[in-house]
Length: 63
Length: 209
Ligand SMILES: [Zn+2]
Image 1 (cartoon, rainbow over the protein chains, first blue to last red):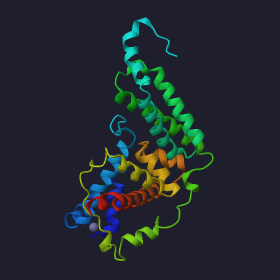
Image 2 (image 1 turned 90 degrees about the vertical axis):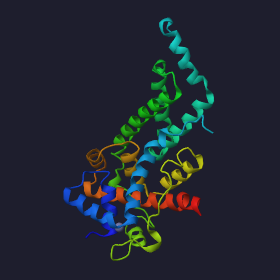
Image 3 (image 1 turned 45 degrees about the vertical axis):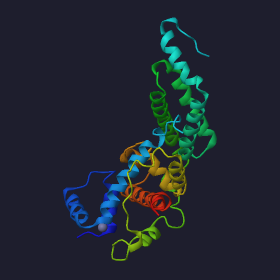
Image 4 (image 1 turned 135 degrees about the vertical axis):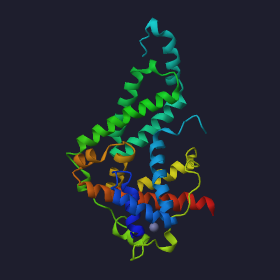
């Protein structure tokens, strides 16, 4: 069973490379029982979305 | 400076409005400069990249009737210019030569966040963030986001921005910066950990309390 430290690293790496089937399973098992890591995974995706909109979401006419 | 061509008169006038809106152009320039500056870390280079991107956009202005479309486009030109600059700069400094930076950046951050047994420290467990987009239109949020980016050690910031802002893929970054894939993965992980921590402390948790 992987630990949170390891799980969070995989949740980040998921954004940069495809995980192996084995990694995916280990991660799925971990996040099934670990709320904080589930949140962490969502937040990694949020950070990606925020970075994408960093340059473009801010319309100057909105005050 | 518009060399009007009769056949495109109508489009030209719509387009001219984009550049005549001084407030829009000024704010766009400011945003572009900030975006470029974060990544190339040199005022002159950043200013030149913005000028060039604006100029290319201006030459193609008749394609854009709406400010939003124009803006997306000018930013995509700017991104490519920044990628070129970073490639050239590689000769001088690549990320492999940059320091990890002091304080809670590498191992120390991991120790701060996790128990020895690999579980979250109780106080550090990620808590639910509100709507992912609830801050996106909020100027104050973006100021915090900027500050958190600035606070990243140089190497983290550079690799993170290449990956997330310039949307370069992993092999290209590794090639350009002379870092191994595993080292890039670890650095991005630490950059995201740190950014996450910073956003949570200064925005998401603050809002709730
Ligand atoms: Zn966990």
